[in-house]
Length: 197
Image 1 (tube, rainbow, N blue to C red):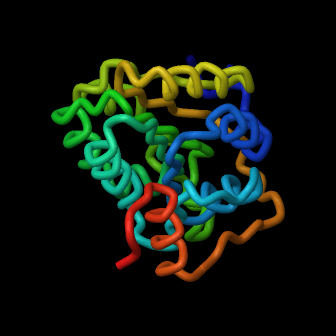
Image 2: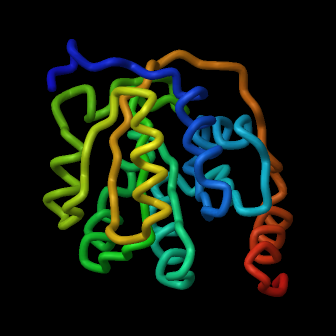
């Protein structure tokens, strides 16, 4: 599929549909827009928002998936953040956590640093990279109904999946999740019946 034939999705509508279909999933968000979008879809105890740690969301979600193998773990991040932590996909591919689903919202830009073009708009196929790292179920999404496919895979927990979702590069109004990292961490731990620390 060439860039001029892709449908560019409204990211807020896509995330709202995806999150609504995953009421029991543990959701980790990459910094910036993915956190805003997931929060806008409805704050909940099982959302772990990252305000910083660029490049760290997939690694955090991998650790969570390995520690909670009976739960669906979904990481929602952006192309720039995933590119920053591209090596994490190698560890995911080597670990093969069946309960991990990686969703990369790809607008072809580094949205949090000034909208510079990212590698994904310059010829890098994140699906090919993920597949090269051993994530066999890697695919692109350019239709709103793709949210349903992703949610089904996440709920089934039969195979690690990687979805590159082509979104428009517009900037909807920011919906800011809690900024208190200790609060977010302890609320998330409580949702897993774990004590605070």
